[in-house]
Image (cartoon, rainbow, N blue to C red; front, side, top):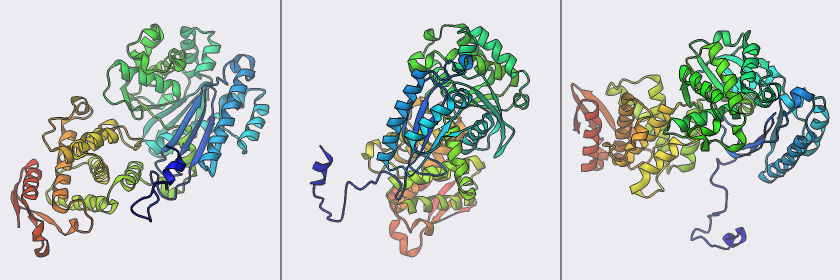
Length: 516
């Protein structure tokens, strides 16, 4: 049906405009970043400038601008034509979407090629703004800021592998070290090695031998950014049958990653189990990305490799945010947005989170700061599945939460959020809960998710997810008995389901139950 056809449908509510944009945060204005890299040219339009930016459109074209630059020193005409054609399309999309603020970033190929200035003049004519040509140090800093924006208390070294270069910078919380750039991008390495992966590994080894950043990496985390490394992570994920297909914060043990990279260098990449998970356009550079990562691990000896979906683009946007917004919790910010968009009452979700703070303290529930943060996030998501059929709210919410574009959370944390919402809707037995989801977290975290789900079930039975009431319900501990007190004017809230759910909740904590 056409838009015009929709506009002819009358609602029973004459004040309701069903075509008004309601799937995005009210008042949001899209922001866009065009990333002109050595391998790909990409447009990402985000819903708005925010602590947890949500991509509303993402498109890339593998133009290969950096191919041959390391040998000839020039951008190839065919690659330039492909890139400019992509940029014309991107300009149309940005204008049509109503993008107000747009940023064009150019990296190694454009800055290193002798005909780069001519190319950049054409870029400016098409996009309407001058491209920001990042130095290697700039690129390293913005990539690291992408990790700072997306990870909780990162500590280690950030590496961003593009088509033309590798940027390295140490990170400790929000503190960045001095960045360095190396001519080890996949396309450049392929050219320099004349197609020999063994030679590429030697080049990487010689280039990284004096890296100051890798000297600080031992026992810490290496944060891997870039399309080739994400494809490498996706291949590992598929080869081991990992249950959650979310690349952001996917982790591989350092020794496991070293052996996997060795296999990618040694064996035919097309013979790998799970290679179908990687697009054909990405496969040719996988061995070269593996060669560089192999040398990073061999030299730096990190404890783990963590893949980040956020990098230079998100780091650029993060750097532009006011300091007070930078300090916001990205996970809670994202959950808040989803709460506003999908809950019946965002006010109730916040009341639930505050109420459970008091309940958990009163019942002496032992939680780490990590678990308290997850519990609050779970409360913000408690009602996001209300429009689904009651029989499927738990499973649908679990899938949406597990696969959402959350940042500032690891995979066990995702499992906690998904399972707590599942338990809230489906009951505490977890009989229908996928064994694959259970694999994502340990027994303790699953137990904490079950307790949170039980608490949410109790609150729902008490007040029906309606705001303004929950705070008046008091829970205290008397010896080994948890006592729920209802004020005189709320005695009518007591019913059999409330009694059962209160008993189930406190029994998980080892207490008897009493309602007065």
